Length: 460
Image 1 (cartoon, one colour):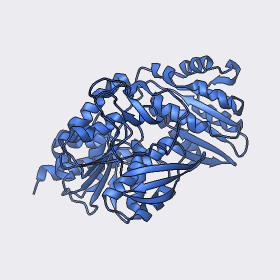
Image 2 (image 1 turned 30 degrees about the vertical axis):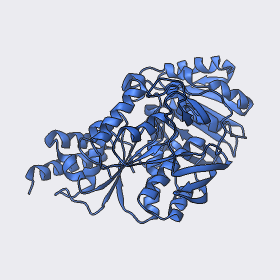
Image 3 (image 1 turned 90 degrees about the vertical axis):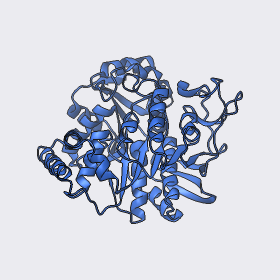
Image 4 (image 1 turned 135 degrees about the vertical axis):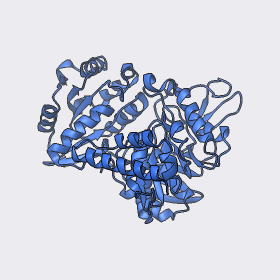
């Protein structure tokens, strides 16, 4: 009997209870305590689980929740770090909560969202059965460094887990390279060359040049950012064949998407209960996970059509015939995709940009100038007011002014309660008040909305 393990679990479980009692979440601190008392605690208690790990720059939370819905549709119980605490301490807390005092659990599967900067460290403590990597985009340079730094860190983690099956985005030249650079079995997902035609000619500069010979990529088709049918004209490095493929986008609305989907040679029409091209990628990753697990195609399709958003990821709150939608923004590519989604709006709307520069957001907010706010000119007459708030709200106001917004349409409002009240009051019935926050601003505004509308806690 491992007395040290038992004492560690007891103390950590008490810490979880105490944190929840004082309404502080208790998602990371107990795990930190556990690792301090017993550094091998995660390695010890995670070894009996079949672990599904999800990492990458964008889409981790949504992809994780899609997979969760697929598991649920198939009657597979699982534990997960639903709160979004995706660093080593938070992941350790999730396992601590799931096991008994001897470190045992009757739930066989663990579904984990892992921060891309923490992935390498977490892999020292566990080996996933499946590792899903969504994409690599430039994100918070002051925290992560260049995108290649993040790529190499994830690759290092993968090399520590040679038995893990990789599920990779075929359309991302950086992500796809992980299959080439490791000995792991790799499964790829992506768009066919005829599935979607992006009318914008710009390719994101995150990965314009070949990873191997530095020649500029050509593209057979372009989805967004640097994603698409890339090929290097010099060395021949190109998009690998995908076995889970979006063959056609048949309907794209502000609330759902329909696609023609190929899963290992089986073609089906799929409804995705999410809007936006970027969410198709998240669902393709989820479908690929279901396929690797050998789950029935019908159950996978049902999960895609019934999936519900997590907090801050298209989470919708309906009140008095109006809708509040909170959508996290954190880097140029993701922000541009959110703006593309809002461009599908056909009604008058209110919109708020909540920009913080705390450590978890990234101190450097110069990335806002890489976001194409100018495209909002297409729906300028539908935007009633553009509210700006957060620590760097004034900087956001300046950015909107240079994007062509009349200063009279821009309102700086630092009080979140007043922001919600004014935004809702000015939203016509049947219309939407869009709130676009960075990470810590999302936590703050979500806490305010929770109190007003009696929502679940973020860890629930």
